[in-house]
Every structure is written in C-alpha cells, then in structure tokens.
Amino acid sequence: GKALKMMSRFHIITLLPNLLRPCLSFVPHAKVMKREYFNSPSLHIEKQTTNSFSSSISELSEETIHNVNGITCREVGIEVRDLGIIKILEATADAQDRLVEVACAVDGELEDDDLRLNSSDPYGAVLWPAASAVCDYLQTEVSKNSPSKSLDGMTILELGTGTGLCAMAAALGGASKVLATDYEEVPLRLLEYAAIHVNNDDTDRTKRLSKIETSLFDICDHETPLPKADIVIAADIMYEPKTGIAMAHRTIEALRAGSRVIIGCSPGRPGRPKFQQVIKELLPNAEADFFEVYGRTCSGPRNDLICGDGSSSVSSVPKPLKVALMDIGPEERNC
Image 1 (spheres, rainbow, N blue to C red):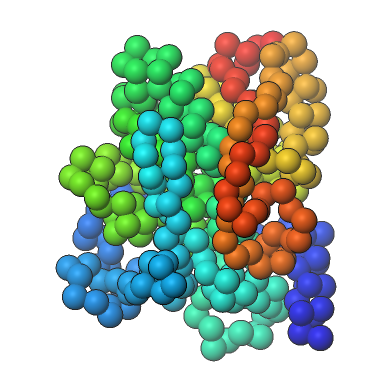
Image 2: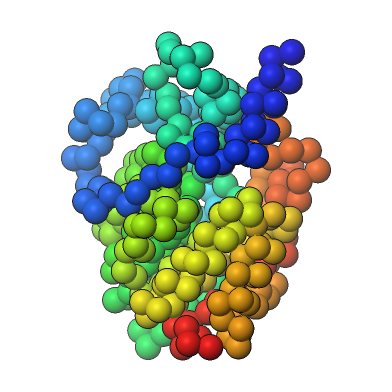
C-alpha cells in the first residue's frame, strides 16, 4: 500500500512539475570548493574516523561508504579516457528509498526528517550513462583538437551536474574553471565532497579539482541568464519534455553568447524529441543533429521510481551503450 501511495505521488510530481518542482535561480556567489568549506556549519558530516577531515567513512562489502549531510553514499570508480579512474558518490539503495520518499511526501508528512529536496528530484544522486560519453568526448575530441591539447584556458559550465562526473573530468582535463550547476542541493553536496575527500590521490589532482565551483541553477528559469563559459555541457537532463524544451532555449542562448554546446542523451529520454523540434524551429539551417557515440551503462542499486525495471541505462556490470551526442558551435547561431 505504501509503495502504491508513493508511486501515485511520484506520477503527480512527473505530471505537474511546475506545481511541485519550484524553479531555482542561479546564485551569483558560487561556492568555491576549498578544504575549509567542509568545516563550515552548512555541511554536516558526521566524524566517525580519525581522518583530518570531518567525515563518516566505512568499508562495507568491499565498498567504501560515506555519509554526506545524512545521505549514505558509496564510492563508484568510473574509467575516463586519458584520465584514469574518477570516483563519484552515489546514494546507496536505502538512501535512494529515503530520497524518493522525501520527493513524494506532502507538506508536513516528514517533519522529523531534516533531508530536503528543493525541487522534489532524486535523480541526481545516481549516475547516468551519457555522463561517461560526454567525459570521453571532452578528452578525445575537444582536448586533443585544441591548440594546447587540453582544456587549458577554458571555462566549462555544466548544467544538471548530478554526481559531478563530467565536472570532475573537465577539471582533471585541464579546464581553468568549471562551474557545476544543478537545481537540487543534494547533487552539489555529493560532488563537493567527492572532489575533495574521495579523489585526493595526489597533489596535482587536488589542485585541478579545486578549479570546480558549484551553484544552484534551474535551466527552466528563463529569467536567469546562463553564466558565461567557453563550453556548456549537459548529460542526461532531458528526462521530460519540459527540460528538453528548456535545454533547447539554453542552447540558443549559449550559442549567441559565443559558447560551444555539447549534450549527451541516453536512449529513451522523453525530452529529446521536443529539444530537436525547438532547435529546428529556431535554427532551421544549422547543423544541429545528434550522432551516436558509446557511453557505458551504470551498475549498482536503483530505486524503481528512479530507474525502473528494463531500463537500458543499468546493467549488472557496466557495458557499452550507444548514446546520442550533439556538438554545436557558435558559428551556427545565425543559421
């Protein structure tokens, strides 16, 4: 009965995003990820180890588990071309259940739970396949075709960062600045923690990851302009028609500002047809088509309301998956 009740509420959230997913605006003063940030009162991390950082870390079934702001997460290592392993944090099965319950709750129902989802969206607490495709593309096509053979000197803006894999790959690939945005706080906190506490293998990595800043930003809030960037990236954010339409308008905005736009989209995303429709209407003569590249499926637990049975995004072990990718430059803005 409870599962059915949660499912019905989840469907209401999906059908009425404007009502139950309030828009968030870009926060001009982005949070720069410095070590001292994690000692601030705004990020509560239980201290249960003798580490020099305040953190909760434990080994469970050969997985490293962290507790970030009350959300239990597991480390997941993702191989990125030319960069090696980048570790992200994903919500565990129990944490996903809790996030879904919070997302589906009505006002006052979970008064004793201090976890909040500003926009009732739990999706950013787990990884999705297009992220690996965008990461690899940044390294193979963007970096290697630039004069410096890296992302050096570039500012990268990521929309809908989720677990932050693309943002960390951009920073490790040499970007001078990376602004990772999302309209939920939870993904931003997981990215910040992973960049400082989890991917601190050596001094060079730590220095590069310090180039990441985070901020709340809602692509559907068209009154708030895009932050300036050389390249705008997005992976698997067109999960409903509304976000597909919004991403199309943001793409046009970025192109007119002189930015290059790179978008990855896994199979079956409902927002992609709307995105393509709007792009064709606004840029009828532009070369703005998706092409296929390979990403990788994701493994690990998924709550049924986050990723249902039969989804091509998840498999027992990661395997190649064809992902749609678009790379469009500012020269197409007047087509």
